[in-house]
Length: 182
Image (cartoon, rainbow, N blue to C red; front, top):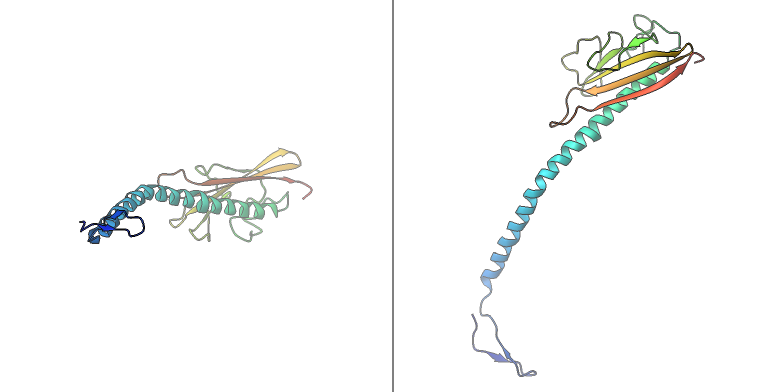
């Protein structure tokens, strides 16, 4: 809404000024909020995907790797000829187990008694056996193989009960060689 034109005294040009600009800021604000809302809704899917990926590959996969390494360290402390230590317990019990006896399985779907243990969501040891305890969240299986007369290979695989979203279940495997000299 213009009112009577004014003249700029220095330029001699005619100036037009608006009488009222009250509605302009409200309309601009509504447009800006609408654009921001559209952008935010577009990013929500990406945020959900990032959360699922971070939980599965950042947290759960890191924990399975840590638990597999812990079991490997426990097995590597055994004497090469040990055939009795029960490594389902920590620290290992001197009798009632398989020790470094050749056997076991690195397949989490086919655990072998004496070569499997279960952990809670917090990482507490729940014991062994091929039947999973109801409160298990992590499973560790291990296999001892004789490569030569003086070298054994130990493979430990740890997995988690379930992944977040429809992702693959995180699983980690570690392997090491143990010589009869140690």
